Image 1 (cartoon, rainbow, N blue to C red):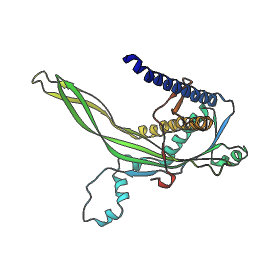
Image 2 (tube, rainbow, N blue to C red; image 1 turned 90 degrees about the horizontal axis):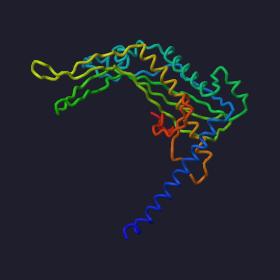
Image 3 (cartoon, rainbow, N blue to C red; image 1 turned 180 degrees about the vertical axis):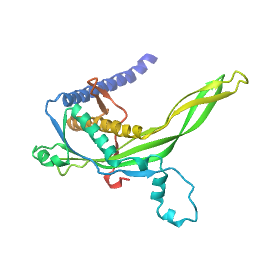
Image 4 (cartoon, rainbow, N blue to C red; image 1 turned 90 degrees about the vertical axis):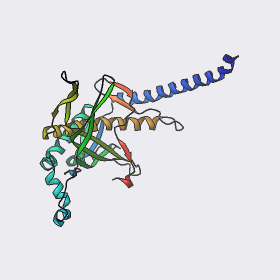
Length: 285
């Protein structure tokens, strides 16, 4: 009798699962059609000419020195370990060239500011990507190393020097003036790396965490620029891919997945972490 009572529920689950699979198949089919299209895609890409830099490390400032308080940004910049030595043009160039190269790898033609006339002559609705702001933050990253030895939990707290890159993108389409997109925010960081282990003393059984610190340096920060540029390109391809999927679904059906295209593996897969955070253009921080 119990089996008969559960039968309607099982049928409902099977129907729901079937609908879910069919929906996923439709979305994947649309995504594949976007990837396989032979139409050459083009974008117009804008990059900023300078970086915004912010030192978030706390320092003890002389309480009576009003000049320091009046020019606290300069004080913090002069105290920074990295920000004051980063060349804006080098950092931006590395990021931009890396992004352009990866977009080209995705089969996308990239036009820059000095090629705007060529882009306009395409007479289509290609996308315009404006990296409106790039911000570097220097800060202390609180980290820890944990292990369980002889049933006891050991934890060592570490302070790591870190640099975070925040970026805000504006997206629009050529000749489509009434279409609005959210601000797209992205953030990546680089920090000291720690390689260590807990070691038990043979003399008194004490436990000590021994480690080697690979300290952050300018080459790693410039490498962050290159890695971020490559990631921006991948994220934008995914973003435009998912816009295409959404636009080609039935009007009463919304997307259930955010797809990622693995260019090297030539494979489409559900990607549950969106590389961009969508923000209200009116509330961009």
